[in-house]
Amino acid sequence: MDLAQKKCVPCERGTLPMQKEAAARLMKQVSGWQLLQISGVDAIEKKYKFRDFAEAMMFVNKVAALAEEEGHHPDIKISWNKVTLTLWTHAIKGLSENDFIMAAKIDAL
Amino acid sequence: MDLAQKKCVPCERGTLPMQKEAAARLMKQVSGWQLLQISGVDAIEKKYKFRDFAEAMMFVNKVAALAEEEGHHPDIKISWNKVTLTLWTHAIKGLSENDFIMAAKIDAL
Image (cartoon, rainbow over all chains, first blue to last red; front, side, top):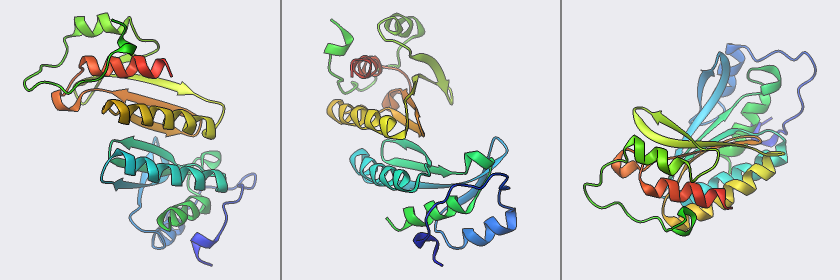
């Protein structure tokens, strides 16, 4: 099933963060995202550049609406026309399929 | 004149970044902001905590509207219910009165 068609679901108790190999496989289904570590926690990040701040904020508000719908919220950094989104699953201190579902849905915006 | 009543104005060519003493004086007219350096550039930053993401985004959109009005845009970082605003004047690689005017106007939101 296409990632963008799935829904984010709450992690089950005791779910382990995704292994590097599984993450690498899902990385192929999203576009422009980078795997990185934030304080030792695996995460994925994508940087966007817009014409100006107004356009950046329009994008951020679309991402925000989607995040509320899915109950999964990226960290968002706005620097005038630049936006950085960072996704990881706080509850399991690492990546889950939810992060890639969100990434695919954001790609599809 | 009260900072929050002033308007941000474009920096004149050759304007120098504000000295520490002048910044320290203006810091007394804003609330909850911290002086810090970002890659060697003086800046001011304030952290906010909201009830949830929706409330954080409502605040961010108010700040965004104000930033467009004044033509002066803080960096904005959103992490679910937490928002960090960072202000400095890119054109002069340091602090100008505009940063404190924006800070005071944000305080007044």
